[in-house]
Structure formats: structure tokens, C-alpha cells
Image (cartoon, rainbow, N blue to C red; front, side, top):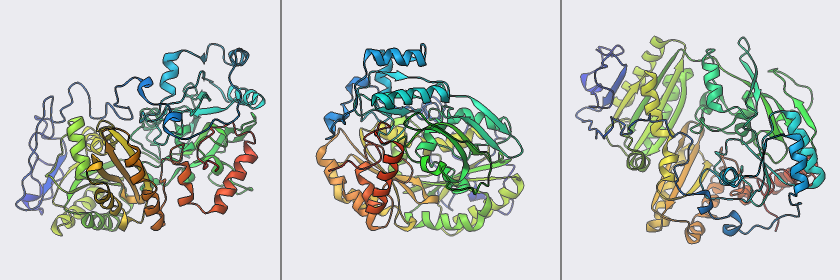
Length: 549
């Protein structure tokens, strides 16, 4: 009945979770494991095992769940002490000039502007009066040349899925959208190099490559909305860093338009180019403050022929760490992701999204993904790891899927935590890097420190690369709660020699925390680079670099 069930495994290792998968399909390779004597109870919800009628578990990936009108979000300038820099104000003459550059693609309508003025978390709102939609690099160049001459500030915007307010205006900056720059330039099936415009949606690129037996080297929960240019501009990490590394390694070349309209064409497809300074690295993670990325050349790996996803329950964080060590040692080259989440995360995705936990209740859960070229080889290695983890008590229950639909359902438990949190109230989000052995200590510390003033304190993230997503929810924004969190979270992180931003960037919200992770000399050098490449400061002002006293 179970194609991958090894006869040598004891019967208790595969106790199916009733109702978790669709009935009538016993051939689907999904198996559930539990410790001896344990039972697996499922709460079957209306509308199927996942309780979402008419939609898959991934239907809302990357989408804000807040239902309020954009105008209900307080203006950023009302919530934060920030002063407008002496930029020019957009005039009717400016609009006419933009219309000559972008016929029919200069937007001034209130409804469309309302959407681009508000961030994904619905905690920041600017008041831009114009949205520009170029299709080509030359059009971006002409726009920036004009804005540079007129001293008009510009906010580049991709899919607007950022977590730190980096992609929305603070005051009345012009919003420059890459949404129409969505063409694949070319793909070479031998080298695996993809060249595309910056406005290509990550999920569209993933589908384009999968049709050609390749994959993107990054995967994000917001893949249905985010743009590859924005991914590169923020050095987005995501779910595949453990296997394929960061964008600093997989991006081969960039085309960037500088603040004065100069087109910097470093769009090489070469894996080796040791001629002078590697200028593209300046723009990866610069959050649109040094230039506007218009095209990307990226190295894409072949699509794995065999993928397994295991969702496991662990009795404590010590066991989570030991499970990760065992994974690295026993799965080796096929280990492609190792994610963790605490019990509070599972409670929230169940409460707000009606997603059902497929295994027995645990204090922690881990999601392990393997990707390889041989299903039989990978299955043997994964089975050996699971037998070891269960036998040692590192894992108390779990389920394994090799079917694409079931794997997506397991991934949804991890990827939709952000959405569940957004439905729980106002969210204070922290994206930090720490030594893995201390990764969860801050969560425990904050639960004690905040007590009943916080509604929920949760921790989850990419254990494989030491990245904790620390989230605190409350019924509404509270200056008192913010004061209890900051600078405590940053000081705690700095004491562990961690980073205050692992993958989300600094944007507007975290810019003044830069000094907790970088020495003064580094911050001065960053300011010097900004002054060199954008002397008037028109590109994404009020972002990334600390505000001056």
C-alpha cells in the first residue's frame, strides 16, 4: 500500500493521520510517523482537511489579509518622527514631462495611488501623488535623469511585499514601479543562466524554469507577488539559502540605472569575471538607495528529480538543534531546507487560516526538505535519518510527502505564518541572525519581559542559516510596547554578535538599528558610497542609512 515503506521499519513508525489527505487515493506517497505508543489526532475542519473551501492552502501566499481601506493606515509621518528633506514638489509641468516619456503610463488616480502608498503589513503610508510605470531601461533612465535635474525624490517599487517599509514613500516621493518590466530576455539551458527584466514575478520565473527542468535558486512565501528586482535589491534570503546560498553568489550580473540616469550595464552571464571591482555587489541589498535595478542575470540550478518533505514534531528546542545536526550528517548533499516553528505558530495558522496540523501536538515543529537526482537513493537516506531521529527521541511524530500537492500543503504551514500573524493584530516584526544554539533564547526572554502586554510572542525561521523571525502581536500599535521591545531586541542581538536584519533589509523601520550590526567606520563608508552614487539623495530617501542627529 505504501510504496516507500521499508519492511524493516516497525509498524508504529507509519501511523496515518486520519483525514489528512484526500480519501480514496491510497497510492499517494504520504506517510505519517509517530513515536511508540503515540496517537495522532486530527481535527477535520469544514471544507476538507485543510478547512479552506474553494481555495488551495497557497491561495493567499504573499497577500495581505487586512481588510481595512488604505486610508485607514496612519501616515508614516504621524507615527514616526521624520522630517521631509528639501526635495522639489511634483508640478503640472513635471507630469507633462513624464507623460512625454511614458505615454498613458503616468498614474495620478487616487485609488491606484492608495495601494502603492501602503506597505504589505499595512503599518506605513506615504502620500505620493504620482506613479510611473516604465517598460524599458531607457525609460527608467530618462525618468531619473529628469528627476535628478529637478531634485524630485523617487521610491522604486516592485511587488511591495517588503517587511520594513523600504518600498513605499514616506512623504510625497514619486513611485517608480517595475511592474511592466516583466519580460524574460533569454535562458541558456546548458549554463542555466537566466536573464530577465527586474519586474518579473518570482513565481512566474519559477514556472518558466520548471517547464525547462530548472528552478530559481531562491523561494519565498511572497513568490506570487514579489519581483526579482526587489528580491535582489533587498538580498532576499528565503527557503533555499541552505542549499543554494544567497543572491550575492547566484546573481551573475545586473543592469542598473543610477540617480543621474546613467545606465550601468554589468549584465554579464559569466560565472568568472575577475576584472576589477565587482560592482554588482554594491546594488545587491542596497534597497534602491544607490540605483534602480532594471535587469538581472542569475544562475539557476537544474530541477531536482526527487523531492521529499518531512514535517516533524520535536519535544524541545534542544531536540530541534540535534535534529538539524543529524540532518546535516545523514542527509548531506540532498538536504535543501530546514525550517522550524514553535507551537504558537501552529496555533495561529490553525486559528486564523483553518490549517490543520498533520502530526501530534508538539512544542516545536521542523520542516525538512530533500532534493536530489534519485528517488530511491534519497528515500533510503531520509528513511535512515527518520529511523535514527525517532529512535533517539529527537522526533516524536511526523509525516512525509513526495506528492507535489501534499508537499505544498506541508509548506503552507510554514509559509503562511506571516499571514496568520497579520490577522492576529498589530505585528512587531524582527528578522535577525544569531548563533543557532541561541536562536530561540530571545523568544523565551521576550515572553518573560513583555508578559500580558503582548498578545502573542512567536519564533520561527530558517534554522539552517541561523535566521530567526521573531514576531510580537498586540491588539493595536502601542508606543509603550515598542519601547519595551526596542532597543532591547537590538541590544540582545548585538551582545550575541548577531545581525539585526538577516534577510528583510533595513528599509525605513530598521535604519536606525544599523549601528548594532555595523561599526561606525562601516556606516561612514556607506554614507560615502551613497553620496558618490546619489549626491542629491533622491533615490529612496529616508531608507537604509541611519537618520542624522
